[in-house]
Length: 346
Image (cartoon, rainbow, N blue to C red):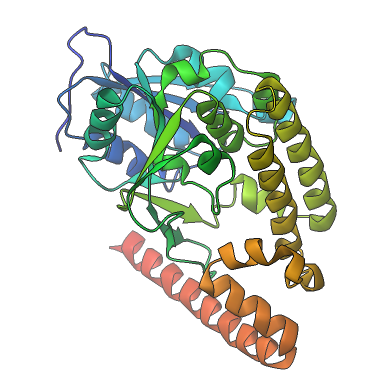
């Protein structure tokens, strides 16, 4: 494992990490940070929102080993439940000392030791670039079936501000690296938004262009029980999706006003896509398959389009395949549980 000690110097990069009940995953995240091979110093700014498992114990363990690298903030009371929905802006960004910020939540992890060096080298050579991202692998942990990658574009390319605002697919959070000046002052459309990654990317778009590297350098875990996506699916999902659409429309409207309408067309399209995707999530297939929204349908992954068309047009076959998939999912979960139990007994 290659580790860069700061030696009293200010770090060039601040790795900002959020955790909450990530005991099974946080070691992977920390090891991914520590294996980075760089020519510059970096720091790990980590915030835990009062985990009830052993996440904080693991963070303390690593902090004792690497006190010059890791700067933790460990809450005793959960702040998200008190209305602080974007803890990066409240607790990590103000503590970041680096010229650049690299994002990674505690249930994801980096896989490439040259990730930071590659992205920071590009940003250093291109001062007009306000966001550098890359593709990522997807790992499901709940036995569900998902796409294998987050790959918003085919091929490494430059991104205009409009590309970042009106993107066909979300960016992997663990891929984001950007100048810290982007988040020096946080507008209300960031602090009031129910999610942090989208308004954060809008802030970058308002300050410059982006760059996408078509190389998997991190892993995004799907099905983590404490994730925002998983929590949203509990309870009245349809009403939650309606509320989400309203909140996101308001966020995009505020961004449009803050930028003087410079990106109005892209903003309108992005807000419409959010609405469309909630229709996908809630299976409103009459709308989803309408020719009026063909552009957004074409942006979906092949796997998603296949299952939508099957459920909408051949529901009997979809039910049959879904039942088989559920059976396979239960088998995989049981197999993993047996492996884990054997490992604990050895």
